[in-house]
Image (cartoon, rainbow, N blue to C red; front, side, top):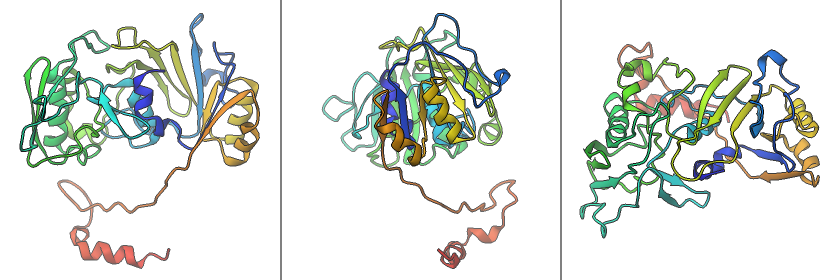
Length: 326
């Protein structure tokens, strides 16, 4: 579709993805959903309907953590650099890859100077500038917005030198600046959001303002997410006018709707159904191994938290982990 889909190609293919080869205009509503819970495609536009089993847990990028949320953000927002399926990175909002040779990285590796595009606007027509980039990083660092604190670890602060130049100042050399997949958010919207709310309960309500190739205009919990093409996005224009992610609670129903042409693509197809579609010439398929893991998250009672202070003791947490019968 364009550079943003390629950025998170691994996330797009959550487990198994099947695409009907003869897709074009949407042909109907997903049978798994009641008619009043389905998004109706705009007439005369190319609509891509995608079925999935897990909907976004939040459209607020500082709260959500599910793969489906990440998929939405990768279409809604831009990043300084794109990540490709082979693990390489290339400029996105940035106009070039900083190096020591071109002056983008200081000799001691602590300061990164990034030039950004001058032709980018937010979806409410306001210009995207270095101030937005600096605000996003500093908002995360200063307010400890945990979704991205690990990605911003080692960054002391970020400065907007001029409208198209950002200086990232690190406390020590940081090797993963290019790989820090932090969505750039509009300062003029988020500076009015209390950081405590941003990291706990704030809900991003459609239409959501970003700078990416698509914009979330509708989100019905348990139903669908509808995104429309951003006609003013920089770079290559997508050929799909709108994308509708249909939420299913039953994989068999989703698989049946895919076969009937009610949806154009599906992700998360269970292996049993996937095997039958894999050999069908009417479908294009993609499969990959996905790593899953379980973890314990400890509430270590910081600030107004109700967690137990004993959990601050690392040896106590280690003892809990060792006590688990695996």
